[in-house]
Image (cartoon, rainbow, N blue to C red; front, side):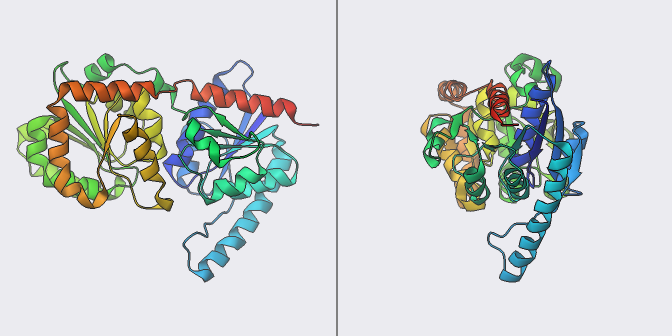
Length: 368
């Protein structure tokens, strides 16, 4: 594989799996040249450039749930995006194209198919969205996180690889993470993940029970950028002792591995990353699925719950159920240990290497 082109973005759930795979691909002795296609001034551009991945911009737009006039405008953007992607693909001449879901992936996958470059789709979730269902028709292979997802794809296209997790998390250690965070071995830690932009209901539920939660554990709270100032105002009103027990972050990237490894319990949404990151760290979870994007988060959460690794709380019940659920779990050490073991049994730490292997196989089979 001489050259690899990747595409996808819009949310961290579409970008981070690609970056995790690229990390492993670029560490190999026969590392290919790489190009990332995405939207200009976007999350994917910022993260790609932070990780030193060459980036080129194309236009794209979603149509699901849009007003007719806006859907039409976005279809025009998609058409322009296909044209721009065709130009980049002809110039770069990749051996294979890797895309995730989301509307940003569609112009890339369509353009690759038009010029005969094989497409591999990376599906992190338990169920394909609209973009992945379209792209799967064009793809040579679809990599999926677990066996239950294979049923969505016919003709042997699906390959079970696991969810691609960044190597800093795979190589993590609970003892080292706790040392870096200043936690003693017997100190309980609750991690709250509000998402990259913010899960307002989760943040509000934490603030509503904050004194009681701080009586149970040290709380490390990733608020998301949009809700950080509101949470920070509450933090500033605490006394010095409580402030020391309550750490808040707008957003984390490098610190995330330590936070996941050090925590005894996490409260989070149920994006696709929960299927890979929490199991690798052996982390029990309270999952609060978002009700957007076709309800896929509930399917992700149910997968972990049914295997004993998580408790699911619906968004509308969170303000009432958060505190008693956290207390019940943190005060029941055997149950928490069973959930941690159940999570570890689901871990696939070699997922990135497996996906890299699929890419090399598909690239070798490409007729020249």
